[in-house]
Picture 1 (spheres, rainbow, N blue to C red):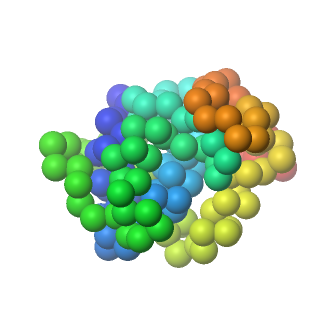
Picture 2: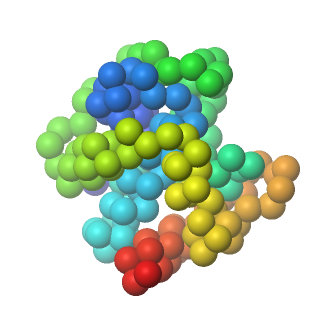
Length: 147
């Protein structure tokens, strides 16, 4: 069952020792969401959605919640969201975080800006609010697995 975006953000930030920036969080969460959908017959990881912004896929609710930190690590401001219980969603987030938390921001951007990916299919320079359809996210997962 899809989890609240703030609960997923909390888990990623905790796994990163609260040294995760907004950019890193957005990339890790998007990749985890894509993998989860691809491996679970389209089941969503979070009950939020991603938009194609200049710096890649963004979950706008998380962005607006943590933008006060700028490029600095996010502090724990997700007070009202209980931890995610062990589940397929929990496993996806933990595995994505273990794999991606050590990567430089530029590496994460390179992953999410893939020319055959969902962000690239929907991005229009300078325009926010363009939703990335689930079908494009699943197609990106399938293309990556086939590559």
